[in-house]
Length: 628
Image 1 (tube, rainbow, N blue to C red):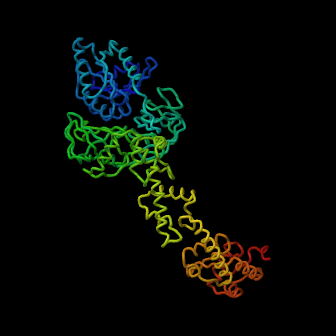
Image 2 (spheres, helix red, strand yellow):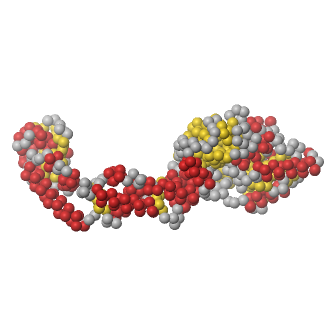
């Protein structure tokens, strides 16, 4: 368990952490000189085989942003209230932030109990307990403590260890997500970053990306609680030694995650709650968004109203000043720009999105469904909503906040097909596309007896996504009901196909004989093949080597010769080309009895195939051994 140590400045948080763990979390000289925490402090202890990580968070209002970055990923809070002061402004703000970030478990310690009478300390304990309950934190009876005398420290350790045992293990979403809270360099090791592993696991050797930006890095080594490990699990505080990056490239605010999984977007669709005591929030107000360990200015766009009052929750969008790559279901906090104060927060519903219409019932219904459903329900609902267009697994994964492999596994035994390109589609939807393809091709037979191209078919089936259409075509072709030939698709009808085969064979013979009779002055291919079917047959003759394709570069048209005619020309030219100085183009054409229209393309073909070698304006025989 990772517990955030929260509370007002000077309420003894750091001293109590020191008493619990024996570790000093105020590392900076300025912290030690001023006696207040400025940066995040980290410590841990073990009790009854339970390991508890503590993040000591600054209590001063000037360092609330630092506190929020430390609260990313905590499972519970250790709420500290001083017996001699009671609930103070930063106590309230810290608890608000913890609740906004989804924390529901708390252990309450009343510090400095040695400075007041017992009844006063007990009164503060009752006050703190009631305050935590109103905020939505579940906590046992507060513990009276003193870091000076040691009062209650052992009891507090047991309470924290019990919280570990009672808490659920963090869910593994199948991909790592580690917001960076510190980055530094160690001589001999290079760059090290630290943070709380929010999702998934990490292992030595993992190839990861730094977001935003997508910089590729590799995990060189890992530490948990100062000990080297091969793997780290979700929820653990971890130090990661990275290869291929400098500390300045992974500052606080960036995060490590799987390559290619998260995409950046300037728009986030969210659920938003305004905390009690905050001013009302109007649409279009500019606020500071704090998510993970990052902070960026954002403009609020309420989707179903113009004003959101304290204590109310609504669907909204945040237009960020710079694109963010945030997993779905991640928690965030909003603060005013001036004066800075925490006013609300919530959860990311759509992490990669665009500007949505306001007061649109369909938009609100879909976002409500996304906000209320778990990952498995989101995946199934989105596939159903996509219909015949299909839904890509990587998009489903981002929307559900899980890895693509988990998104696929969540489909389970549902009647859903995962086709080409990782596109998921309902079986009923692909069945409908299969039927529509057959119907469309049958209806087009009178006007398109040779069938339709894939693009023509797609234009007549706009409801089918490209990957779904290709999957359906492949199934029909594999099943034998559809024929894909010459770039066209048509229904396979055995009698018709037999007749077509006979007709094509006869036509191929006629085309071959026409080219042979044409000799070295063959007919224009455009006239020889005026229709697509004959054109396809000519192309087939070229592929089979029966016809030789050359190019008239002047007229920008092709000229086809029969292969036997080309061989005869080679035999005729060979002895002439073998005698120095070879032949000019005109001389070669005269020897063959053809004009430049035909001689130039033929000679360039002979050059390309290595039969002749061109030097200046003359050609000589390049392969004497083949003259016979």
